[in-house]
Length: 125
Picture 1 (cartoon, rainbow, N blue to C red):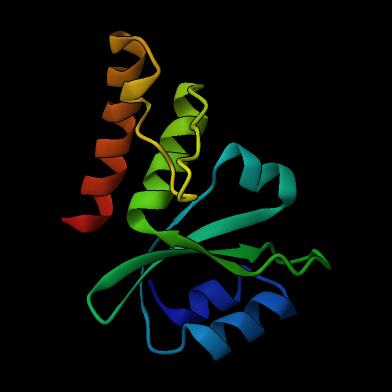
Picture 2 (tube, rainbow, N blue to C red):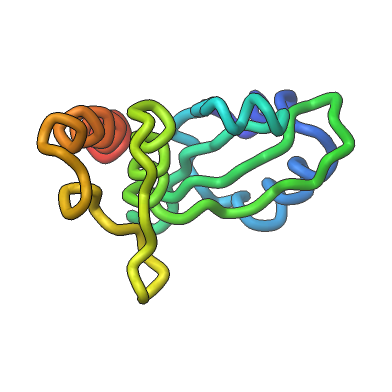
């Protein structure tokens, strides 16, 4: 995926974010979650200096500036699996997301974990 392709998908705020913060990143892919769709945005998976991150960029044709980083691949994959599985994640006291194995039924956790693993393998491999 090339920078020009992504520039064509986002508005002026997203373009500014890309050229300010992601100009040296490799672009691995685009994900659109249900919450992305409702907010008219998309998630860009990037790699820079050996680390994989998620960034949120607004869709072209919007006037919104929701551009931001959305954590590392682990954080994004956990949230992605939450949205797809319907399992609500809880926060630890540290502010990090808690693995749902601690508060869900085994079948529910395994459903969530399968989605999480697929997202991790898609980008970390």
